[in-house]
Image 1 (cartoon, rainbow, N blue to C red):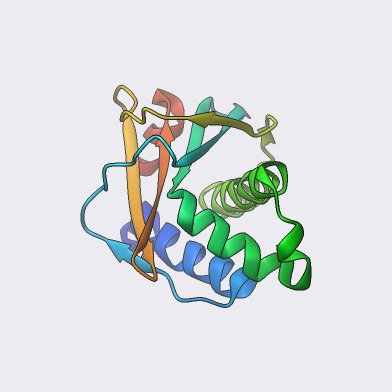
Image 2 (image 1 turned 90 degrees about the vertical axis):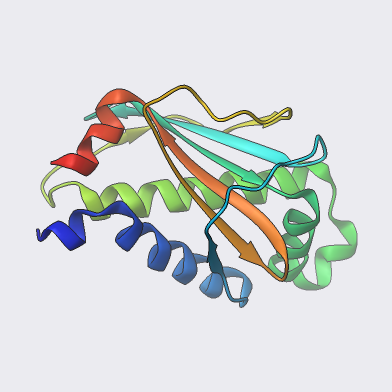
Length: 157
């Protein structure tokens, strides 16, 4: 693995773009700044248990969550509620974390994830070590965070 491939930004940006574009048929752009999220934003966290310990968090503006869920659920969008939007956020985080870990771990290494859990604001950056990537879709923001000493240490291998 080259140092460029090892750089997580070089992995996570195209990975998230592909997942969002294939799921919701919309373009994702990386953002240079981490937005301030209001209390209406939604968050989901997912623990990594093995072979390293850590956590992924996905924070999304409520308007973006509603927008993406309405695209994904299509004709059923009129029946969307907070539970189905949260389920979409959980599944999105699970997909991102699984694909990301598959990309950064050796092919013969499996991993174990927990079950996504939702949380609400206020949203504060977790204590270091943390890696963070923010994105924008149609002027609405979301942020992916990776925390945990052994998880974040993989970037420097």
